[in-house]
Image (cartoon, rainbow, N blue to C red; front, side, top):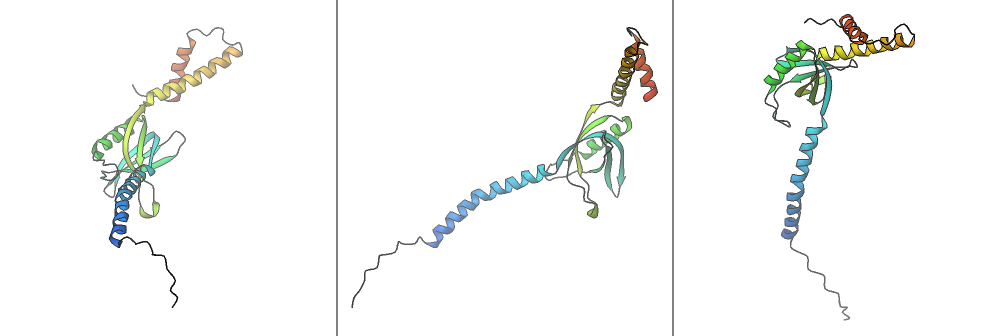
Length: 183
């Protein structure tokens, strides 16, 4: 009988120790992964829309708002309280602001969360609305641009010499012609 000496195998740790290590790793990685998913979920659908509030209305028990940007793109969004992921509980205040901006035609910056899914009739939700510029200020800037362009042409052609004091009168006349606003 020739017995060959076999090297002794290293003792394997008991299964409970391996399970404990895996549980400890999962206890650390799990909450970090959950936090990453929550933050990703919150910020994935968030965007800012700058434009004018065209109208605010109620449809099927939900408050909706139509926004139009300066380029003509229209966005329909809803306005409702949401507990997750923004914890927005002030939809009545936001609705009042939106209604006021719809009446004044002011330029606003609107923070929106969510996506438009037509098949499921899902609309993005308005999180916050911030005033940027009044309709009157935008009309004044537009009148200034047109008046400056007209003044420049008149000066270049030699029709007008100097033009002192003419600019303000021209801005006023162009402003009235472009966008008459009631006082």
